[in-house]
Length: 108
Ligand SMILES: [Zn+2]
Image 1 (cartoon, rainbow, N blue to C red):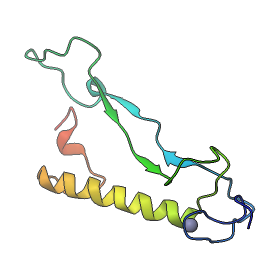
Image 2: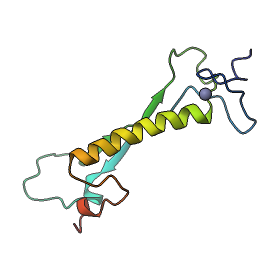
Image 3: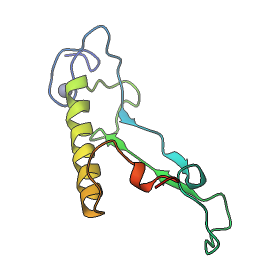
Image 4: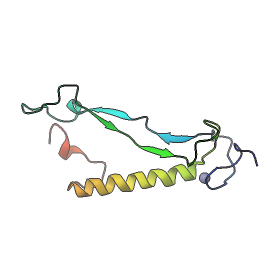
C-alpha cells in the first residue's frame, strides 16, 4: 500500500483530485480588530491589535512531511469538530451560532 494511495487515517483510496497533505489549517490568520470593532479610548494594546486565529487539523505522527494523504472525508470530520468548538464558544458568549456577526461588528 503506497503512502500516497490511501488516506493515512481511514484508508480510503485517494481520488485523482486529492493531493497528499500532512495537515490542514488556516496558517494562523491575523484578524485586525480595528476592521471589526470600534477602537475606543481605554485600549492599551500598543501594537496593531491583531487577534491570532488558528484552525488546524494535525495528522498523527509527522513522518513523510508533505507526502501523506488525508482524504476529504477525514478533513471534513476535523472541520466539523472545529465548527462544534466555534458554535459552543459563540453560544457561551451569548451569540447565536450562525454566520451573523452583526451584533459584534462596528455598527452593532
Ligand atoms: Zn480518510
